[in-house]
Image (cartoon, rainbow, N blue to C red):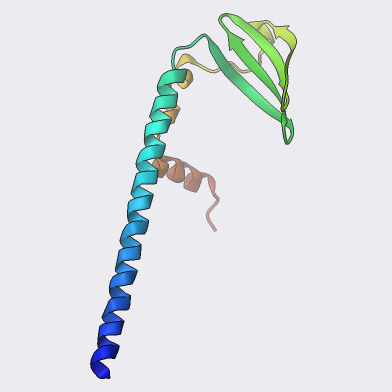
Length: 126
């Protein structure tokens, strides 16, 4: 009877270890896939003629965006099923224009630790 209890305890322990290993495997596969997709999307969107400069949310599925198309700036409304041009803007009309380094992805290569350290610096100490 005692031998069966010990065997049952070890069996439960090995099942727990197996489930933890499967969980860690799924986490690693998810991480690798996410990094791969992000790299692919960054490569696809890099050095293109169309760039989203700024987005402002009006409601859940309605946005106003400033888009740079070549050398022109367009103000567009983006809804669930439609996209309409509201106005064409001159570069002088913009109060902030992103630098080319921001579009080249310098900010995209930050790791989580750098972002966390910046946020820690902004939080006031007691």
